[in-house]
Amino acid sequence: FRDTAIRHRPFPNTQDMLAMLVTPSAAFRSPGAIPHHAAAVRRVSSVMQEDDAPAPAPMPAAKKSMEMDYESSGFIKLSEAARTKLDQFSEGTLDNGWATSTEISDKAGMIALAEKLNPTIGFWDPLGIVDDASPETIGWFRHAEIKHGRVAMAGFVGYCLQSNGVHFPWGIQGQFAGYDLPAVSFGDIAAAGGPADQWDALPTAGKAQILLVIGFLEMYGETSAALEMDGQKHYVRGGKPGYYPSFQGRMPHPVPLDLWDPFGFTKQMAPERKEKALLAEINNG
Image (cartoon, rainbow, N blue to C red; front, top):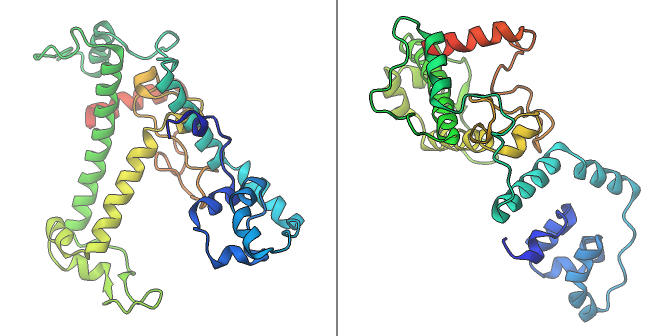
């Protein structure tokens, strides 16, 4: 991936990727199955010559339109922006963002924040974590505090609901795509006992799906390209700690709701109200 020729190559379209992934086989010997992009045709030209097959027909207008729509989608823009960020990082030209940032970057700022959070206790750092901390370290700690507080609050609500037998009314496993799996409903899982017992009762495939989704959400939230599409920056590059990027218009499959504020309750808040709500959130977290 770091090779210069690959690094500066235009981002591949659908036909390019298919040509790279599919090995030369009988599929390439059928003119209708050959990718029509010029680069893809060059890759399979040797196979074509062996059978002396006719040149492929021009791509239908509908296909061209669909390809152009795909290449102009938010997902492709996100991928190209991420590649640019990776190139800048490897070349040492990535801006750290703190020169123009208004976020807290030193101990004085942390003391002022602590006074807002709890004037009675004030600033308390017995281990001296922020004494000589860099702006990147302070940004990392602030983001971790906000994120872990949100997870803890959501986990507490979930624990209370599960402990009281609240669950979805439908099933989570059954016959699917020809596989005859044992039928398991959310009610069956809830009947296993407390939240810890319910986790043990989950099918292995269900546990794997949960862990994979958590991993994806973590990865997406750390993607600078996704943050910049919202006009934000990464929290260690002078961005806003606790900000999570939107999914809208960027995924290959439509995502109806965002992870943060899915129903848009905070979008109409005044900046002063948002600041007060964030202080309350940090205290409660």
